[in-house]
Length: 304
Image 1 (cartoon, rainbow, N blue to C red):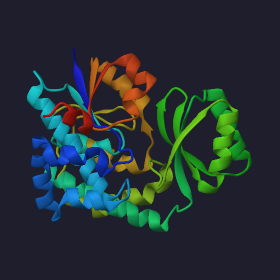
Image 2: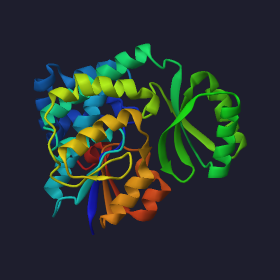
Image 3: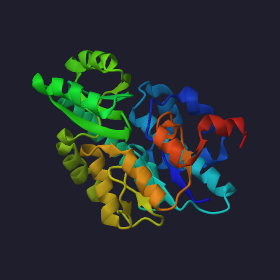
Image 4: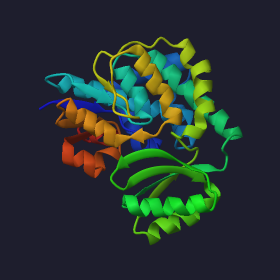
């Protein structure tokens, strides 16, 4: 059975869900010791006191936990995964795992990107959210979008996750009406993200990160095949990895393409390393792979 490791996108992250793992698990404590030294603060304390689900500290903690769980899995595995992928925020852990960035630089990059995003969305696109919805077939989706077009409403796709499952960025003022229309058409609204993500309108944020963050980091070719979450491209060069990291700001995620790419590589088993309530549950994922998951809670339950 050929395995790929998946570092999941980040959902709401709270100390109550992961704090015990971070404080007690030896793999997490080792990762945390480095993070504390590199960043100059106690990550667990900032994460505990930070409040916001997507704060800089929550993002660092999520990265630490994903990689610590991968360390734990590696010590128990008979062979290395044949490929890795990190949809959305999971890119950061994936590039560290694949050796394209050192762990230390990945920590610095995570913090710097979080600060760039916070500053950018404080001034730009303040009225935009990214909304996720499912159970909306293509013909009904076109109907909903046609109504937005007819009203002159701006929108851009931020993700293609599964059949009938999309992420769409649009004005917050139109969101309630759009959600109502989704329901009327037989679809189901899930959650809305603010700040928004992965839309072509955010090209200036991409340029800012390229100039202020990635220009100061050494990106290397991955040591294992790394699958880009925007289009499923299998990356084997430093430039490809660098482009993927920038594409995350202004190109939508396409999990459908990722699944196709992994199956093309002969992957039959996915190991999710980190808390995930989305990608491992998608019908497309479950049909194609034998799915396994490691989370802070499961690791604590296993007492290791």
